[in-house]
Length: 73
Image 1: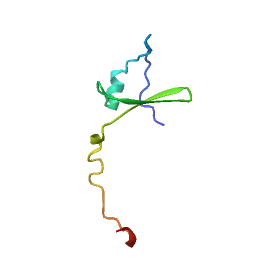
Image 2: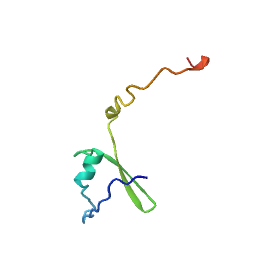
Image 3: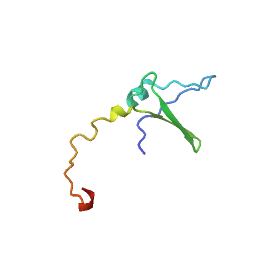
Image 4: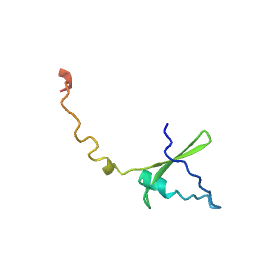
């Protein structure tokens, strides 16, 4: 596991936190963006939900000429 950045935040009386700017920029979080929250083993992890459109083109340039078995054509 690579920890790129670890910052300290404070939980408000309303149980809210402010995500530091460097962290927001690093993960591409914008106002109104959604995140999934996972809690386990005494930790909380926030995972930004990326729109499916943001994945468009990630396989551009991949070699699609692969040998296939006769029953898989």
